[in-house]
Length: 289
Image 1 (cartoon, helix red, strand yellow):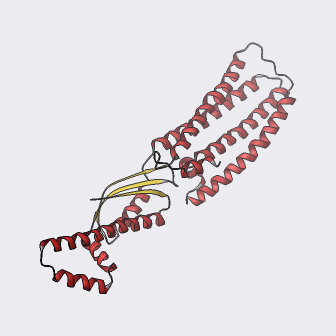
Image 2 (tube, one colour; image 1 turned 45 degrees about the vertical axis):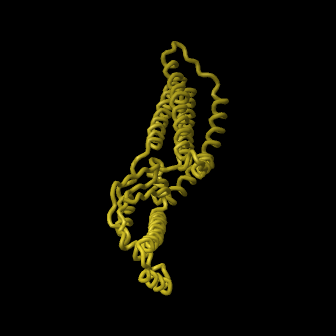
Image 3 (cartoon, helix red, strand yellow; image 1 turned 45 degrees about the horizontal axis):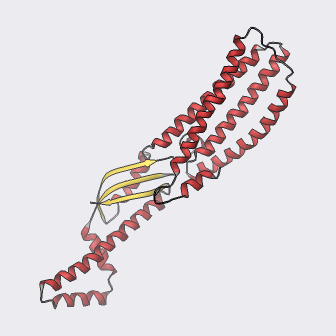
């Protein structure tokens, strides 16, 4: 339950965006394991029992004890995982169901769905064993194994599809992407926004990229506004006193450097503004046209 946060925050020069996708890779491995080991073995056991000429059901007492212990342990972890998912969904401002489908924490979802399948499987197994014992019909036990196999296979297929989608990455929701573009277009220093691209790994983590045509005159005015009045007057007097082309050129280079620095500050300000309004946008790349 703690590994996802660690992987997301761990950065190095070779992985500037962290290891967010690695969580989906390990969750995918787990989903494949459930499919082949859990669902496959259960289906094989049930089908082979139906095809067998003699299927003997022994004393179910030990099975009931094991199922009871499993129900207790799996129920506790399922409850904990559900509470974690509810908190994460609330933090992402989405419903619990939406978070289960698209949330950026595949480990918590994996644990919760596996435990749900386990609790349901225990209920099916206990019911079928009891009916098989008192109705003296071992075939009910085989049908129970097949039902559990189908349950595990369904959960595994959902997890595999979900984690593959997380690894591939999808576009941000159109409404959320439009809000980010609206913030950009509404800023006084932005003339137009082009080539918008985004990627999302659930409602909590997104990346946004766009090419921005800045209003050079507005950026220059903002740079001038940062110059104290006395210094501005002194610069004007200095400009009037220039006699050579080189003096004017050096002065323009100095002023141009200040404008460029102001442009960089404006880009930082816009990125902070976007992150304050859309906290799920973790990485913003604004390219200057």
